[in-house]
Image (cartoon, rainbow, N blue to C red; front, side, top):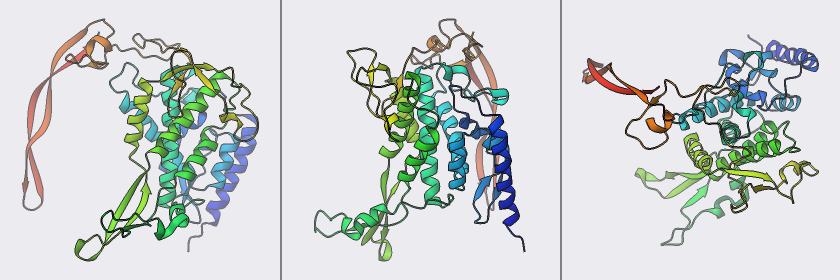
Length: 391
């Protein structure tokens, strides 16, 4: 019978070797956190089962991108790196979806040879960088909280605090009869654990001692706040013949698209900030001290940024022309919409350079019919499509 003991021993030996390697080759500080690279390293073939059936990585390439505290958190919460990897990939997909029609489209780079996953844009304290920090922090919060309720992280479970706090007495009364018609139950997503883990893991290395670090911490916290604010109650009916005599309710995370949409709205209204006279670049003392700083608007006529607002320090580049120094690809060759007056329109996307119009032939399946049983037959239709690309 197969025994998991050798697998566990191999994992521990791998960690020990890595500790020695890391003492000589610490990951570069940089402006962009190295843990983002987990999105590309944490593939399923790098993950092996432990004795409890959960997954943990023993690939040194994974741990090489983590700081000492992050590696400790991974050891203490078996299975959590799988969730972090999923979250990082979800953040990339959501960022690219939200900015698919913008001059900057959240492109990612090959991170080999020390390159940052999102490119050199993260060296700038602009609003695009603010969004990257917020969406990655939010994604880790979301993925870890959901993984707890799915049972794939050893150190956390469903959130039963609602039941423990009030039990059936917290049920909502029926407005007509005054009789309680629902009660807490089921498996709530563990937003408390996800929020706390994201703070400890994502914020590692950001001490809040510089204005840029304060910006990063604020945007990380904004991402988490948007996830927590979107928790919603879901219920299931119980009763004979589909009746809803009693409902069992629990708290559920939204789809990550909801979080992405909200953060994109905050991006458009992001606040340019500076240090307030009442703030401190040292961040204060204690474990929560680095969150006690204050930022004030660069324009004194604007209101101070709220917890959910994104903040930035400097204007964004134009993103019109290729600039290898800043990692900007430019918009030459990008498709645009000639009928739109928005950011995806050819006038704005092409930065006034003009655009090329051409017709292409697209072959698609069409006139599909279902044949009993069980086959779908389709025709191939050729259609002409007009596309516009920036000069």
